[in-house]
Structure formats: structure tokens, C-alpha cells
Length: 165
Image (cartoon, rainbow, N blue to C red; front, side, top):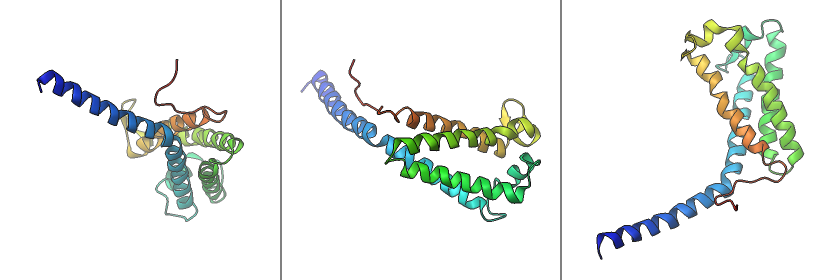
């Protein structure tokens, strides 16, 4: 076997493996994404039910200073848990997915407020260097992107490993 044939054999094996992996990802990625978002929102929300347990509690208290935090934080906790449950149960109904994504986007607006209302808390060197709190907020861009992908499928769309033209 010469070098060209060995390379072609390797390429053929690689292509078969790559095709299988890509098809697996296309088949299961949305379910994994829904599950991951559900777990994140339930986990972060549940922590807010117990005073002093959530690392975001102080940031929420300082951001939403115009609302009684003893009322607002449990409300936010419930809101986040509902979003999480919506993603986990969204496997069954597209209407639930739509409502869940709407609740998520409304929550994300509030989550971004410290970027404007508390710049000294989220930036050490605007606009390039974020504090840990700032990083906690900016990572929500991934959550927003994930919700957009899920939202793109509520009318029957799907992820395809080899789209037809």
C-alpha cells in the first residue's frame, strides 16, 4: 500500500466516523440543550429560595434596589425554576417552549441590568475587563443563543447533519 492509498483509506474511515458523530449530534443536540438549560435554571433558581445561598443574591439586591428584595428574590427564584421546568417539559409541547423562551428573554433583560445600573460592580476596566460578576452576566449570551436555537425549532425546524439543497 502506497502513501496515497493509506491517506485515502484514512480519509474514508475518518469521513465515516465524522458522519456518524455529526448525525448523532444533529439528532440529540436540541434535547441536550433543553436539558442543560432546564438544569441551569432550576439549579440557580432553587438557590435563590434560601437566603444567603445564591452567589447572585447580593448582585440582585443591589440591582433591584427599588423593589423589596425579600419579595423580589423569591419571585425571581420561582420565575427561574418555572423556566427550567419549561425547558425540561418542553420536549412535549411547542406552546410550552414558546412561553418558556419568552420568560427567559424577560429574565435576561433583568439579568443584564447590572451592566448599566452597577458598572462599578461588573467592570474593572470598561469595556474590556469584567469582574467575576460581569462574567456571570455576560455568559448569559450563550443562554440567549441557546434559547434562539431552541426557539427556531418550535414550528418543526430541526438540526440537520447534511441539509438538502
